[in-house]
Amino acid sequence: MYTPSDFPPFAVTVDLVVLTVRSDALCALLVRRGEAPYRGRWALPGGFVRESESVDAAAARELVEETGVSGLHLEQLATYGEPRRDPRMRVVSVAYLALAPDLPVPVAGTDAAAASWVPVSEVSALAFDHARILADGVERARGKLEYTALGTEFCGSEFTVAELRRVYEIVWGVSLDPRNFHRKVTGVEGFLEATGETTARDGGRPAALYRRGGASVLYPPLVRG
Amino acid sequence: MYTPSDFPPFAVTVDLVVLTVRSDALCALLVRRGEAPYRGRWALPGGFVRESESVDAAAARELVEETGVSGLHLEQLATYGEPRRDPRMRVVSVAYLALAPDLPVPVAGTDAAAASWVPVSEVSALAFDHARILADGVERARGKLEYTALGTEFCGSEFTVAELRRVYEIVWGVSLDPRNFHRKVTGVEGFLEATGETTARDGGRPAALYRRGGASVLYPPLVRG
DNA sequence: TAGGGTTATCGTCAGATTGACGACAAGCAA
DNA sequence: TTGCTTGTCGTCAATCTGACGATAACCCTA
Image (cartoon, rainbow over all chains, first blue to last red):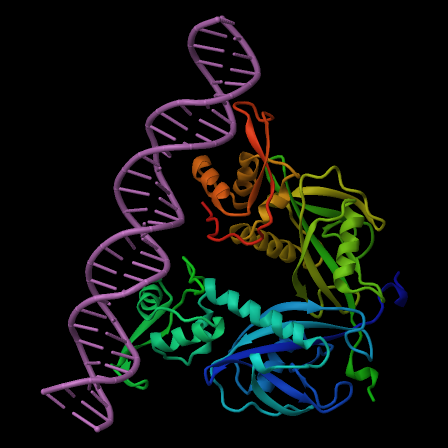
């Protein structure tokens, strides 16, 4: 009915673009490769999809393994399948984008020598085609902040409007008017949910604390700069 | 260095969601399967990725084979990799979205018994998980029309504002005010390029003909109904 | 050849949204 | 108490949107 020549065998992997905002910079989670090829180079975390798991499940599994945290937002980014992107064999990689709050130091994975948060502006010479995947992920994240409520994923469970604004400023690399930003995000139905509490952790007048609201799309969208 | 158990072999395929607007309906290109499994069922066109071609190239090749036309807009949609989505073996499928003008009758593919444009509202019982892939493609197309200039891809090389408006109305399933739509699309810089000619093919007063402009993103976006 | 029907295009106007920015509130430190 | 800092509310002009009136330019038919 069908023969092996009908479907050349591929290896299928997942690669993760995990982004966070910390120390006033947009950072990506990278691992240093412990094995050839590209031994010693920085790369995106990822791994082979197992025989009995879905591709999405493989991505979720790797994400928990790398960050030690579950429940993070995870979405498919794109699939990369150039014939020679891995020198060993034909590999098709499904990339995922995850947005995380400022997590503690990442866990060193099983097959990675080290894991670290690296500001995306300082990333250079990644293994394979991971530079392009990372760039695609950053661009997707920037776009997502405009018309979805995902900016809150970079914050903790409770946050102030100013903290959220700094996320936008850092991810987009622009500065936003605090008063207009405040009016906008508190005005969009379902974006933020007031907790009733305040905090003075940034000095100055105490700010109201909010939680993520139920809305996932923002209409009208926020606008960059 | 590595053993077969590290990377279980997968078959990798591409599936195409090819959409067009014809006879006042949003239609998808479907083929009737000539082989098991799902023999006789409608399915999305697609096929195996060859050993020496990239996944993107495989999608482009299939698109030309199925439509007989090259140069259509083609973009990655998503990748589907549930373990049992193909009963024969583990298959990961990369789906692509293509938008086409009203093409002549599609060409019957090599391994498909028949190919046809089917209104998406009348599609039922597709093979594999193709119903979900088609739904994802339609939803993506609807969204793309809001903030990109891709609506023009459904039109021929020259078209009137009213023809473009009907595309939006059919894809979104809403009705739009002709006067406001006209103001909007002719006002966005780079969206439409006047040819200087007119046509009266719809009866009534002759309408100005336009070509696609260079813009790919629409700012501000169009809004659904 | 004068209407009447149809579609295209321009104009108007009120309401909503945006961007720039003034003003005041509420904490901390000297 | 005086500043300094950050948060929040208000104002105002410019712009955009949605609803819709009016006119233009073709076809058809009487």
